[in-house]
Image (cartoon, rainbow, N blue to C red; front, side, top):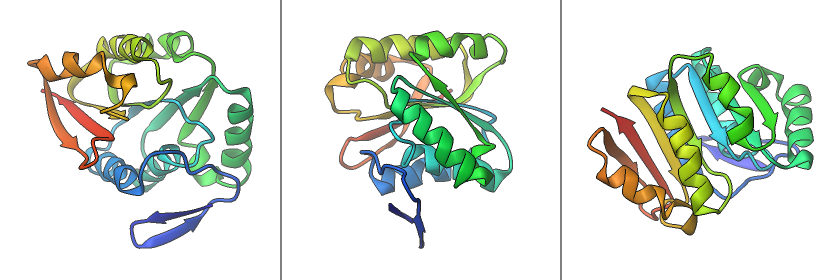
Length: 187
């Protein structure tokens, strides 16, 4: 697979491209480079080719931070571990992959950190699950934390959309032209 990464074209062996546009991935990359978050979470890595690659690349650029990424696919979990350990070890040291429902695997990690600096919700298409996952992270968000949602205009964000839009403590700082990505910052 080849990814257009800024002005560079990066070829990534067996990683899947995923469904997020390169432009949205670059927006996330730029935010992470600029904000230098420490504790990052990603729900849904598929086969680890798109957003995971951009996020881990930004962390490697910063030489700082850890992305905790979960998915329920055993095949995907085995694949990303193989690729990031063997083909991309310079990025793999910035990512920890977890197999299972994020609502089960992330709470022990969340209990040990003060705050979540960045979270990307890009998992299941179920709206109830998305709002449940958002609430799990909301308890650990603090001033400056970023919440990114992929497929903003789709069914999976139907229930979380009004919560964020009505919140007085969140500001919508980025909304992609095609409504696929929305990024919110805690005031």
